[in-house]
Image 1 (cartoon, helix red, strand yellow):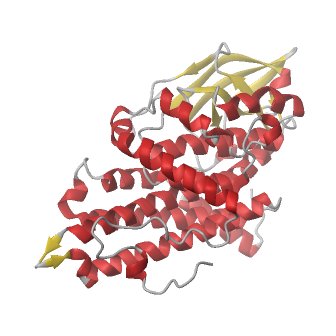
Image 2 (tube, rainbow, N blue to C red):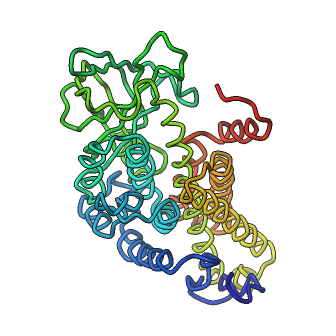
Length: 410
């Protein structure tokens, strides 16, 4: 732990023109030196490269290729991938640290990283054969391709096992037909991990398999970008499969075992969404602290009004608590242990906390917070998705309750 942490106002720089200090923000704790170095590198890049462009990327609904190249050069696209596959091998704690720093300035860029690292690379690391890992992971880690992951369908969201996309074996190939919706990185990805039903006679969750599909595969049709409320820098599309023929060797994991693998991927992926939420909340807190220190009403900076102080205090407390929940889940995964309930708890609390923090940030900014020029307006739009994607808040509560009561999942 850090030294004297008394005096919340002093810790977050209240009353100091220019705002918050990033040298004592409650994130050191017992982080090893390599993680502190990673955090500072990610923070510097996010502040210098992402922050000045985040509003433009949001407006244009795109992250420029040159920015993605810079992100790849820093190793952020291979943060989970072992060094033997050209990755950084920094595990889920490393991913959580990078995600928070990037999300502090742009939720959409962080979501791109979450889909690439936590979902696509995460599934390959979990279930792919050694040959598949050797073929796909180095290019993904180096940023030669972005990765995407396709589970959700127009008629199956929270009830993911109800998916209807089919894969039928024909000789040396699998032929896929169906569609997937809300696919992050869809317009830019070079590699897709796709869930499809391979045994129509099995129970919903026991007849599903995963397939690795390359972008130029005939029959894979990539739709136009969706026009979204938030996370606009990250592209989201509909995928359609029309007699999409995939080599049998691209089956990822055991036949009919894809749904169980997908649930494990989501368990781990919730760490990334939790850390994304923490980053947005921290951004809301820091922007609000800076604004409140400079904005004067009734003859003094509004940060001197107790009503504002209490809002900031709640934001700081909940952000810190969420970070600890996320890091606990990350450390469990890095230790090779299940984090089913811990990931659900972290994702649930962090995502709902982020929306509260961003709403408070707009309230503190007043009318200015409602303007597109103000970052907290964008943070709020970005934050809401964290309560929906990778399992809604309601699904997280189901998971937690089922684990507490030892209720078997469907």
